[in-house]
Image (cartoon, rainbow, N blue to C red):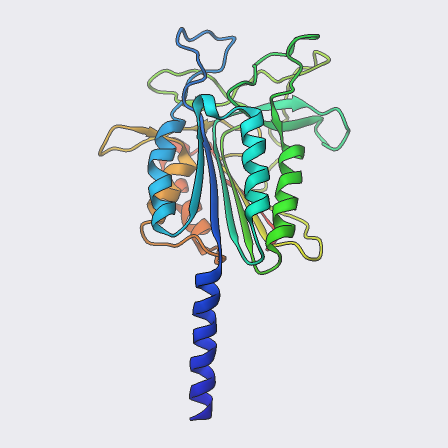
Length: 292
């Protein structure tokens, strides 16, 4: 009898902890980069809006407090403000989910922390495609080093009992073509202050899983990236609606019909397996970076 009472109490405590656990999501999407005339010197318009239409209702249904930034709202300053806000609001034990559906671009590394000489950047609405000395010098690119600082801050706030997911439905190289058969996110043209050409050795990266370091007091973290750094992130089309979506966003939405986004990371494997079955994505490898 005593054992049954202990088990019941433990179960009630688990339920109370789950109920108290905060769930927060920041979802950033850009479809319209203001390139109505399809100028090749500007960022091509993509299907990021459709990703948000899929995901926001799903996260709200699962009890997440969702903040979304769309198109002109998704400037560098607004994204940083959103990251700061979600970090400030988060508490021990929370689950935090960050999602970026937008272009990506390789950026010349200036501090020597990248073995290949290139940082990776997300492209907010007000980030330009080309470097111009004395004009646009990359101040509105969201560099991976900068994003990592905010992620570390969130991990410290939510602690070891929390969980941070970071989803990058973008790519860091590829084609900005927007023909019916393409629908890709990213560009082959790197952002370089010195005029350095982006020439990736495609044999250098063969792993699709990387270990992320954890400092004492930080939460676990898992990064989901739509493709390897040199690959194109192709959008996928839903056959029933003929609507295009980001590949990661599309399959995350699918698995959320049967899986909850919790501290249990089994849902991630389901996304990876479904992406691997799509023939359109046969030259694209989903990458996972995890502290677990």
